[in-house]
Length: 264
Image (tube, rainbow, N blue to C red; front, side, top):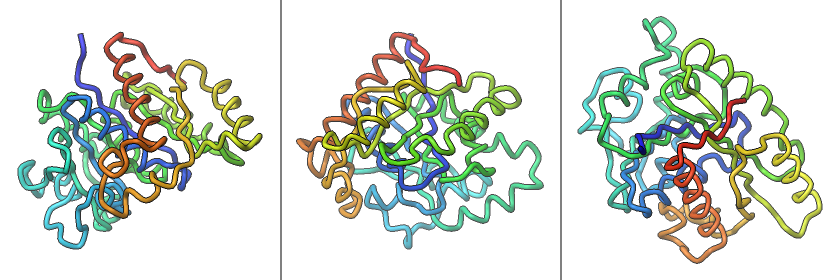
């Protein structure tokens, strides 16, 4: 039986397509008629802006929500896709790293908020900051699995072992159900030998956790956030849109089949 799936999208390296992956997979599953919540947990707020929300006009954000200073009704934002709901972020979230230090059970704050929404959504995605700090730790404690985007460029796997070690430690100490739910290769360029070599390396390293196809380097994917739209509402026929829809279908197939992406 299918159960609510919570997924963090994480890689401590910046520029790997993390936010694009979070938005695109969440939007794809909403298009596939799943009720999806997307939590922007990155102080940069790129997911929030990429879905057309003006960060400067936000009165309540994920920061207020996890600290218990606002209600769910005040923080939830509808998006241009009827089945996709956003919890937005702003730079204010930077302060949470400091404020949470002395909070009891601080690693479980996000988990507690998501537990209260049980039954409201089929999928929950958490877009993590590009670091392995307290916010990312909160996200990893709250989810079932991690989606790891990796770019098909030089040093693609640099730092990935650190992320895998963090996932292992969280599973051992805070969240025994945590696994690598999927690895997504981004910025793939079929014309380059380097891209092909890196893709082979990713496949070898992660095995069954890797999800086909690789996401091509695509101008339309890069443009969509500046228009405040997921790629499917900006250019549904683009190669980037096709790739993310295929990945979402495979993710859904694995979840329905009860397959684990893999434990590191």
